[in-house]
Length: 288
Image (cartoon, rainbow, N blue to C red; front, side, top):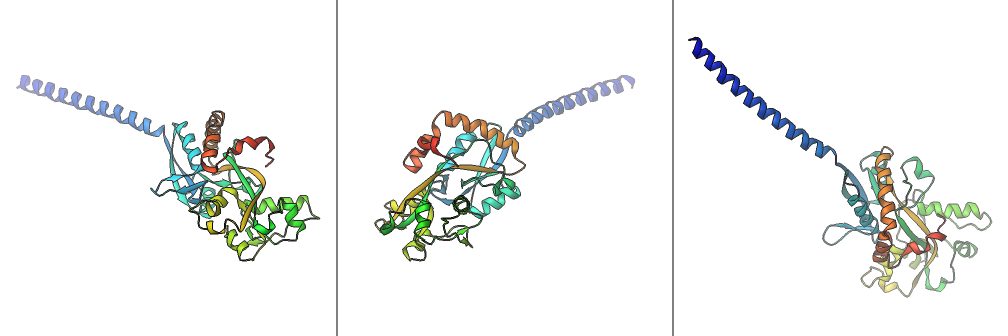
């Protein structure tokens, strides 16, 4: 009887050892997987899906554009992050990044003092954008904001939270004796082409990339007006990704990656691809 109990004890003990060994082995495997997963942080990067050629949703439903493609290169250099691109509107992007719905966002964003209170601007800018005046062909002699102001022309309204508004406001503050008539609009963006063609304003602030996709390109919606309107550049401006205020570590990681990308001239290549020219060639003359 004692021998039988002894043998049963050995069998039960061996079984327990086998079970515990298997459990421990499973735990180690699981903890390794969890550790691997925890090393990669998924972040949501919003983009303005209607801002061609800076960012948009292509015919196959994929995010693309200068801003998006640069961020894809950043993602490749940051194995600790996995980017999820979320297409949205310009307004929703600003609100979403500020509130933490998105960790970062790209929308051909200009730097403004007001925005520094809401977002982290990294050390390194993302790209460059040409800003200019959209005018009727008959007014193509108007080359600068000073020319526009001196002519007493009216400007299409710009939303006060749009950085284009800040650009004109800065000019007015610098030249108080020759101000552009600046009116704050209700919508973040207005159809500047329509405003000018219909005579509701003599001109409007436009981004060259938008002008190309709205007017110059053969398949653009206003290509029939290509001989009636002109675009006159008055400045080239740095553009930035916007980071949520709690994402300093993410912004720092971006800085290291984008510097390498610029050093490799990949931003110049993408500028040529999406804008038709290398805007980085005029970087030395960019003041903003």
